[in-house]
Image (cartoon, rainbow, N blue to C red; front, side, top):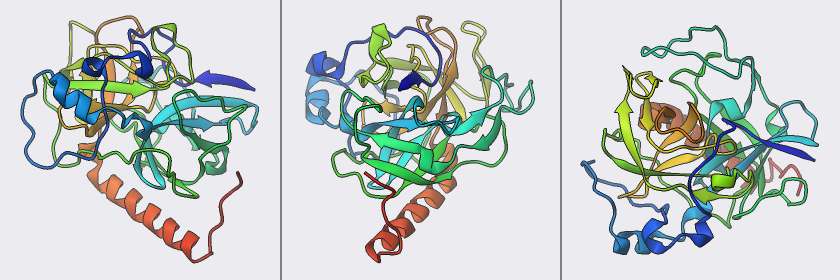
Length: 305
């Protein structure tokens, strides 16, 4: 099986989760009510309390050419037992690999996407190290929920409704009530494999700072952000696409990897803001709940192992 990571073929700058000390491990948890304030670097005590929740970041394997032996691997966040948050470009066929956007969220080079991949060709894997050619998926998709249109600018977000609940991963909380702010600290987590870019290895990157909130153009980094996007300074790489940016203070998911520049470069790493898609999230949660009810009633069966 040929497995290729979705996203930018670039280098990262972190080691694996298993090798990070408590002060450098980002955790994913269910905290997150209340006001959003400007953050400081989390204390070792806070990180130690939250560590161990990274299992909520899952691998999203999509056979976009309908050939099960050729899989594109992305990342995602389990936000309900049978619902995964990821990037739209991970689950739809690409027209171009280099979307060009302006600060209003409009495309400068036409459509970026064609039709969606068949949901049944999308599988979810859990664990620190994933091999879609060898591992049994924890679940399969039965439906995708995403914004309308064929442009990724300002809209690179999607939800996957699954055919069964995933029990061996943490459920992560999305921040839907407020945006990140410039200067906030986040940690990207995904299956890009760190500085060696070993696709299939889940890695928490080093602390990243939110540089710019859209709509904006950052002349220092070259990032152009729509109203529903933000930019961070440290790289995420091929295989991290669709993976979450985690608020380092609360453990909430605040964004998903969309696009960016060089893997080794600083800045121009663009995320789609989750709070801008609160209504879409509500629609996806409702769809996932209905699917769970159908499974319980025997009207919906899992799609295989």
